[in-house]
Amino acid sequence: MSTDMSPAEHPRAASIESGTGTALATWVDRIEQAGGRDLDHTAIARLLPERWDITEWWAQGVTVTYEQLIGRRVVGQSCEGDFAASASRTLVGDPDAVRARWDAYMTPARRARLGLEEPSLTDTATWRYWRAAVEDGTRLSVNITAKAAAKGSATRSPGAGSSRNPRSTLSIEHKGLGSAADRDAWKAAWTRTLDDFTALTGPDSTVPINTAPGKENR
Image (cartoon, rainbow, N blue to C red; front, side, top):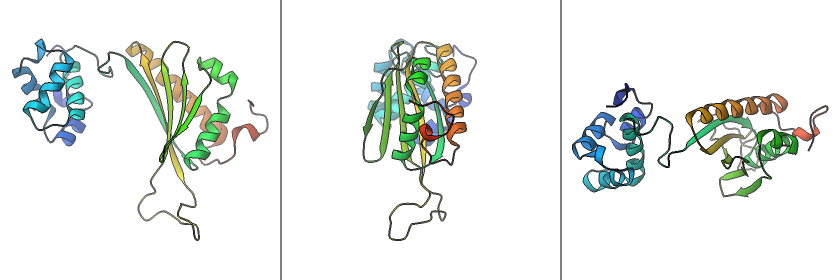
């Protein structure tokens, strides 16, 4: 190996073994014996499902992890060669309410400080998205979905099919970053942003930010 990390020490070792039914060390051995060091990413990812019982999705993950272990890419680097920063919070409110609070929080002044352009809002049946291009050419997506209630803990409104106190998960994904240092810097920035967002509204708040007295408005 070209790194000091063994397969068992890799952050994705447990998830790969759980998802594929095969230990990461075994996948590494198989790729090595198949001449993996002389193959590019596409060739390895294609080879795995051709020879072994593994889905294409997991083949991509195993290939990236193998390339990290042999020093071809660093941990956290995607198969495209870039990096991504992420952060998340669980907040009270359904996805529409949480996105409305986030959109109210992301005033033009805050967007300007973060280098964000005008956002676009899109929906699917289960997700709400708040996306914005970043002036450095990277991409930001804020993804919000309902959080399943703990078993036995959900309280239903009379005659309604939704929880009386719905909660949602807000996840930030910032992709296209050029280096691990950029990833770490943006992860810290988004963690601070979420801390500030939560402090202004509180994790249990349902009040739109732009109605709070003394706070920055749009």
